[in-house]
Figure (spheres, rainbow, N blue to C red):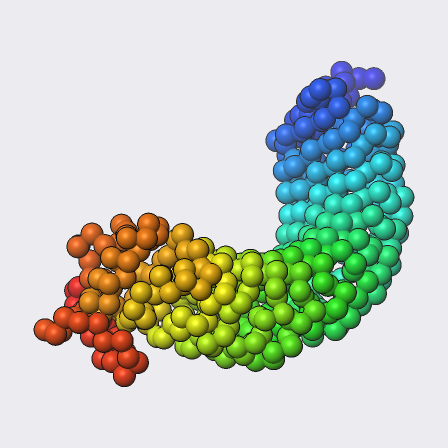
Length: 420
């Protein structure tokens, strides 16, 4: 071998060393790697061939490809984090070796799909994080080997609901957490989740929905505790039977939609509901019975709507602790609002009601009441430096809807003037 060849070999070895992630082993079982100076193709030898290893973290290690045998002889491996790399494709068989694997994180890579059979040997996986890729296709049968699957995050991909087979999860009935957020789930099949028996959390945030989807309200989903439907284009909740099957639901998030119409009976089946988020919609009217007699409801968020009238009857019989009515068009509340809530089952501890176009006399009554009852409120907003209410020479609270428009306009005029 010539001197030049030796020099080239040494130089190549140095380059490969600089490209490879640096890995350290903790407690003789957990391997954590940090990125080298260049993009890297994962090969056998970096983390393989250690039967004691139970966890491997290769997060943000500039990996663009994984070669066969990269995970050979990892018979104890249960945790594998490959997130925040540049992987665009996984070869069939590349993760066959670590058969005890239960957690696999492939989030924030560049994956578009998976070869059918990829998970055939890793049947113990129960947590699968695939968020932040470019997945646009999921072959029917890809998840069939994963009968122990409980956690699935498919958020922030390029899925089309209309293209997802309703039988995709038929062999994984024990999923408890399912995240489809930031995909297009319009026209997804009505029976998409029909095989689920233990679902607790379903996230459909930013999925282009125009109505509450039927696949999210089926009778097999009585185990669901949290349903997230935020940041969509849902305009109404006018079907009283919409949530009739979700009697186990504890949290319902409908924030950042365009909801205007609500059937007063739509929430009545949700006897275990603890928190409802309706912030930033277009609600003008609260039905007189909307939150009535809900035995576990303690938190209601209604900020950012167009509400003028707040009927006390709508909350009767519910143990309300937190109420947010900020950023609406409220000029008054019924006299002794908080006391009335308390007398009918409410336990108000925190009440947010600023900003609104308050009549000063009405706001004064409310402030006295929350202080007297020890209810937490946004007191820092009432420092005398910014307008919080409007009044005429006649300083008394006019509790009637006929006065609302006048005080709303007066408040808007004052607010505009104060900004100049």
